[in-house]
Image (cartoon, rainbow, N blue to C red):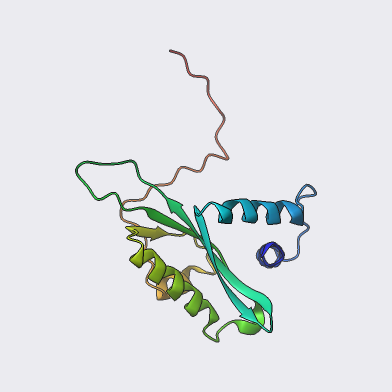
Length: 148
């Protein structure tokens, strides 16, 4: 799956070289650690014994609330199908399996940050622009000192 992640990101970045510090072994270790504790789930598509697609789901627990449901939110990411299996139902099957599991597990909402290219696919699968979600990208802010 780490190799497929590598391929996926190379496709996204049109063949640009990755950061020199990125190692495939780090991706493998990250996936092994996250998938072993149940916080992350993954669905895969195989063809001829090879993984040809995957989608990841991260369980985001909510703080207990005495006035509202405590259902978790699911963060969907790393959805990828290799070019030979695209437009043949593999991606739809992955997303349907993920949505079925989320429903049966009592998730409240699934969220995804789609790329411009993938947004139509997500919308065809039932995802809609949020009415309540706000985002604060932190990468461009300068940290400030807090005084008490």
